[in-house]
Structures are given as C-alpha cells and as structure tokens.
Image: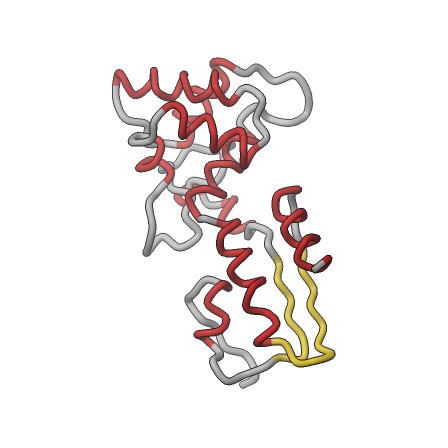
Length: 181
C-alpha cells in the first residue's frame, strides 16, 4: 500500500507529485538488466534483435529510425560526444555506406558494421561505446537528468537526503556540478 508505479520519466517528478515533498530521493541512472538481457529491446550487441534502444517503447524514435535518417556528421558527433568513441568518424562513414545497400534494422547489423572498422584490442567489445552513445541519444538521457535535477529543490524537503547513482562520466559530471552548486 506504500508503493506505486508510474509509467513516466523521472524528469516528470514535479507533475507526478505536484504538492508532495520527499524526505529522501534515490535516482539510479543505470540501465535495467532486463532491458539488456532481452534481445527484443535492442540494447545489446551480444544478441541479435531489432535496433530499438528506447527505454519507453511507446514514445520517441528508435535507434534504427535515427541511424537510417541521420547525417554522417550527426552520427559521428553523437558517437564522439556521448560515447567518447575515437573512431566515431570511421564508424559513422561505415553506417552511411551500409545504408547504400539497405536500412540498418538489427543490433547485429550495427555490431558487424562497427566491427568492420574497429577491431577488438582488449576486453571491451568494439561496439560498447557506440551502443552507449546511441542509447543516450535515443532516450535523451542527459536532458532528462538535467531536467530532474532542476526540479529536486522543489520536491525534496529541507534537510532531505538525495542519493544519485551514476554509471559513466557524462552523468557523473552533470551530477557533481549540480551538487557543487
């Protein structure tokens, strides 16, 4: 009776709870393992599935829709900015070249395209950074993080506790700057 589930983004906290203030808030910015484990969701390069990557499949655009319509520069910029992918230009060019013969629709097509220009050199799979970058872009994750942070002062009681678990440097930087202010 003390637990409710809302189908929404955490950035909508103020509209979900317009007159409520909390003693504590926990934001876990990580991806859910059930998303990664389900090939249908399109988050993983380890199994084949539709190239979706949306956290909420009822809204927004899929990774396939974006990759099949974005320019080479847009793809390169996103891979570099959100994935710190040093081979972003080569990967973007390979994606554009792939589109000459047809649209990119599956995770294995994207993975194979990335592997065609970037070989594995260590423990980390060559597609890791690109998949992260595309997921962040498709879900507009950094926008939603900034949006929720801007609303927390209004929904957290004075003396309340805020805990944020972040998983990569882009999120971490935004969170640290928020706490610094």
